[in-house]
Image 1 (cartoon, rainbow over the protein chains, first blue to last red):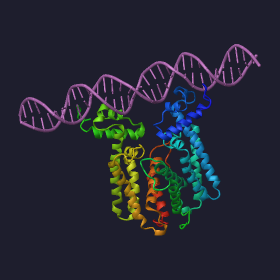
Image 2 (tube, rainbow over the protein chains, first blue to last red):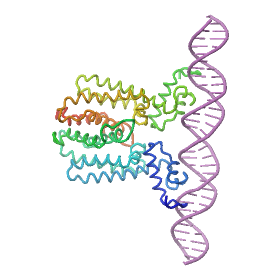
Image 3 (cartoon, chains in turn red, purple, blue, cyan):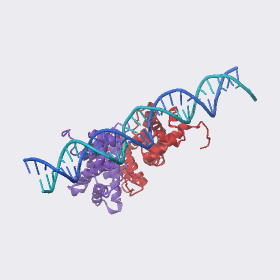
Image 4 (spheres, rainbow over the protein chains, first blue to last red):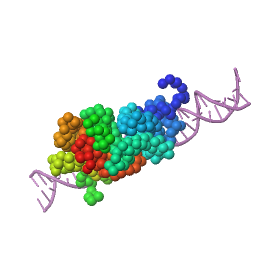
Length: 205
Length: 205
DNA sequence: TGTACATCAGTGAACGCGCGTTCACTGATGTAC
DNA sequence: TGTACATCAGTGAACGCGCGTTCACTGATGTAC
């Protein structure tokens, strides 16, 4: 606890942290403002010094998550190096790695019902994060012959959906589902087969 | 309302229906036993004549959903007719169609946190439903040369993840996400590309 | 067909609980002189 | 360096609320004779 004083020090961060761990354990609607306050060793009323209320706290957690996520995706993409293909695959891996490393943030972002449009700031950072995937898809699609090239947004959407599905169904313990394979393998092979279907990976690799 | 008497007639079904519509609107944890009762025009206490409690009600909704789902998947698969490939694709379409047609059931089944292991009955029907996809995958994988054939459970998992991801991200209004494409198209093309990657569909079709 | 009675499916009042939010307050911190 | 005072970041009591659950009850239905 450290400083055991009247003043907390950095309650704001502690509340977000509490929110994240609760959201991770109990799901977005199972989370409680009072409990987050308790976990930070503080009265529920203190929360209102830093946030407008319950929703605002979750939105802040989501915002923070999108910022981390955006950076992770940008790092993984690395401006398309060493190759458009490798960079694209790296973003897929980064997606799953993020979901694993920051499950609370992931839930706040994608399962809490917080709208991306809630604030301009949130909208901006979320767009930036999700834009990386699309950028990667656009670059990669240059390698497909024009006539058989699907819209890049479409194939970004495919990869996003596949990644999200793997996270929801196999990376969490969800509905009593035993994962037959490690989620990383599942995503890796799934993306591999998909890219082969686009003619971007040689058939026998 | 029909019979406006002391006795409801079929409260049990009415409660499940109310549960489903609430769960669909508010999410699994936003659902309330009292509100479901209110929606059925009945005192909360009446619920206990038919269910053990809140959880039991949701579990019953999920059970009902799995039963419908299993049947839809089996119909779609149609014992592998007219071809293993066509039948496989049909199950993918059926998955999405089910999620669209029965959103409340879908949420109860996959987002409510109800474990498939909750009762033997639930486990049985859920296994049956999800087994169809695996059966379809096994049949289809016979058409892939042995040496480059991935485990059928793996590719069933890929298709399930892709379908689930499309539902969660693009078929619902979720996090302010505008779907750039109709979810049906997204899933259809996604599965198409994937199957091409497996060498099951000619490259130029 | 009529009556007595058991069973069934609801009521409604009550409970204890934890929630989100408000409010006047007070202790701690920072700053001006 | 010391003091006065403004500001900040918490407290704690209170509120009204809806929840899930229990209980003794009662009206409606079904059945035996």
